[in-house]
Image 1 (cartoon, one colour):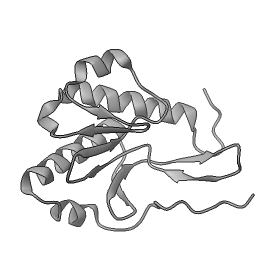
Image 2: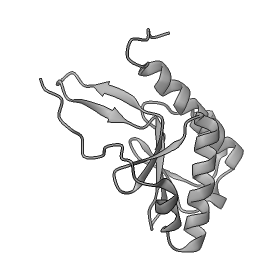
Image 3: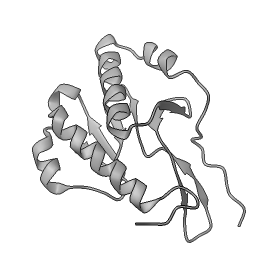
Image 4: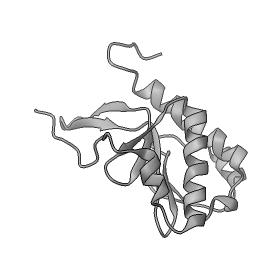
Length: 146
């Protein structure tokens, strides 16, 4: 089956311009803090994915159906209702999550009303666990799974 392009693709858009346009200012400050945290933890530079997701690193997936595509290892979007962190793809450490603070969780997303609602050191550990899991589950092309 031919690869179907996913809706959200990595772009050459300017991450700094995107962050500068986030409003209100408190959400912008949170977005910048999450961006710095994800860059530090992942060791990857921020890149825009679509028009509203800042992603770090990437992986290639292929489903049994034949559908395949690329996605960021981790990422976030500073939405009005909540900071949306794309970090839960197939990995969750319940012990860490119990120490995180106030959040909501979806299938692959962690939703934070405010960054101050969570322990940022624990959040860094959660992100690091996700990055490690994703790199193990989706090694770069030509690499062997550990």
